Length: 438
Image (cartoon, rainbow, N blue to C red; front, side):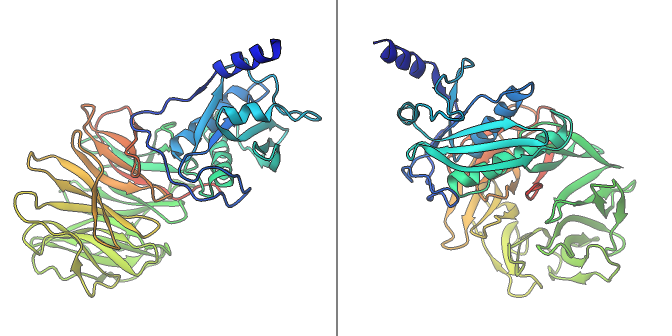
């Protein structure tokens, strides 16, 4: 009776971390790393045990939050009393109880002199499935230290689900309505930090390796010039673009060697390409004949571009070859709702996200499938703009007025679950980085 009572109390002490808003189940593939067995139509339950040491609570909290934000794992958490039957050297622990709680994996992390020793237990097999020592850099709870822990979370998520996490990433954005300043924030909302020396920064975009940002700067007379910022040194270099007029909305090609951007003068705008790090002439891509062609985004293989074009008399999303040939509309509309713009191509190549104006003047985010042109609306509250995909091709960062002032939010494009990333108003034009630690 005592053992049964103890088990019942332990079950009562364990809860599932609450998820904000929608919590629709995810469809997962079999894990590719450690072969955990679980229902592929559910999110696998993962229990993160208490982490010993001075910074143990912070480590455990970061791991749990990263798993929860990834939307592929159901985090099972114990109260601070911990698990008396947790696996230790020479003792296997109560795996049958963990299974009843819905855990298919147990994460056991132990701080070491240089980082973190992590063992992942397979609950069904009642054994340790994989072990690894991770290096953790920097002072505890510093930005670099937390990024190292995010990297651990991402790899553990790949062990369990077969999909690498997105915690070790950052988001670039513009803070301020007038004379905005470029900022970078961690994917969990920590450490919002200004970058570069220029006010008037606009439309940041990441180099494929996450080492540089390209962006435009509004000058004293309203015209824009393009710059490339080295994030390690803080040095910015002006890009060799077409002189005069407007130069804006730059984007790196997947190889990082070329930047495509918008250039316009008095009549219309077109897309041009130039080298990102070497001096070279700009090359014209589109011929809009007085229409506006802007906001380019590359397909993952670098062979095609999606962009906004007004050649039909109103903005729609177009696709062309990377050199501008074979342009064709991806979206088309009739009636009052005929404004679609600001595309972003998903890293897996399957979808393009964009914003669509509604009859009330607000914008909502949609995705369109490249396979069958099916459209899915992702948002409905407030006005939502400037979608940017995460590296997992599932999550999207965007700016929204849904809570009043314009802030950044992350949405899970599969379940519709969302979370707020920033807390200061006047935040816009987000761009999600590639993985920054692997």
